[in-house]
Image (cartoon, rainbow, N blue to C red; front, side, top):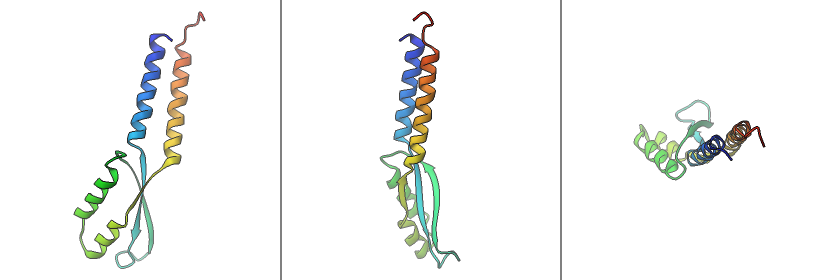
Amino acid sequence: MNKKQLTAMWTGIIVFVVMGLFPPWIVNIPWDSRLEPMAGWRVDFEYGFIISHSWQAQTASNMERNSEARAESNLNKRHDIDFPTLIIQWLIVGAITTGLVLTFRDRKQ
């Protein structure tokens, strides 16, 4: 491998790892029928650090308490990693990295 190929490969590996450390999250928040006319689940999408994300989200929701019902609703938040989105992102990074490594190969070989 030449220098350009190694740079492309290591950049792809670093991006791949960073995407794993800060994955996309789906935040399922229950709607309270006392606060909202429609009962059910509201879904938010966000990115966050894999280790501290749930703790930070719960701390933030505790600080945002406006009423007992809102606090109850916030404590029931569920954070799940959005694996389909993460896998698609990884595939795109893998395809781009592979394309760059192949593009930068020596023409003589």
